[in-house]
Length: 278
Image (cartoon, rainbow, N blue to C red; front, side):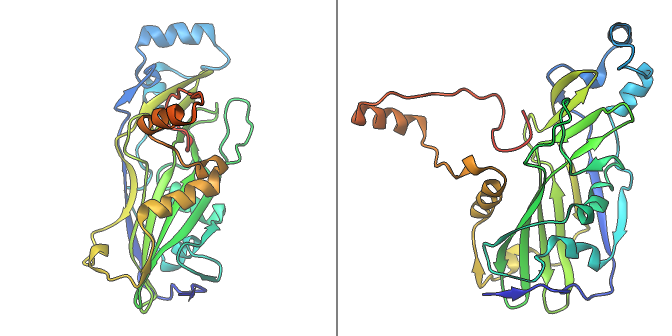
C-alpha cells in the first residue's frame, strides 16, 4: 500500500512532550563522581583541559532536561515523515535540522554531528526512519537517531548509543497519536568524553514521550505491517553495511565447523557493535 505523507499533519492541536533524564547509574571510571582530591590531581595534571571547579564538574555530568514539558505543533512532527510517498518497509533519511528541536528539549548542546577526540565525523551520524505499519486510519513510523550532547565550551560530551523512536499518526484526522524517543535501556549505553578520557556509562532512562493517549497501538488492526525486529534490522543496515551479516549461534558454529572441517575465526567484542556505544 503506497501512502502519500505530503503535509499529512493538518491538525491545529498542540502536542505536549515530556522529558525524562535520569542520572548516571553506573560507569567504568566514574568521571561523573570524582572526589575533590581526585579532581584536584586531575586538574593539576591537565590544567589547560580541566578549566572548571569540582562542584561545576559534578553538576555538568548530571544534567537535567531543559524542558520537562514542552509544547510542539503538529507540523513539527512532519520531519519524521517521508518527503512524499512510501510503502511499508521503506527507509528514508531524516532532516537533522528538523530533529534538533526535539533533542534540545534534553540539552541545548544537542547535535547530530557525531565526533570523537580527533574531531573526525563518523559516517553513522544522522537519523533514518522506516514505515512499519499502515491501516486505513493509522500509520506507524519507527526511527533511529545518532546524536551527541556537547555539555560545555571545553568540549565535554555525552555520546548516546542511539535514540530509538516511534511515531503513530491518525491519517484521517492528520494528527499525532503517540510519539516516543528513547535511549536503549541497557548497560553501557552512553560514552562520556571528558578530560582526555572516555568513560562508558549507564543511564537508566533518557526519553521523550507524549502524554498518555486514549489509544493503544495494540488496539490498531494493521492492514500491512512488518515486525518491529524487521524494522530495527532495516534501520541498522541503513547505518552499518555489516549489519546485513546473518550471525550464527556459537553452538551451531561449532557443529558447522566440524561438518565442513573448517576453522573458527572468533572475535571478542566489548560492548555493542552496531551503534555508538563502546
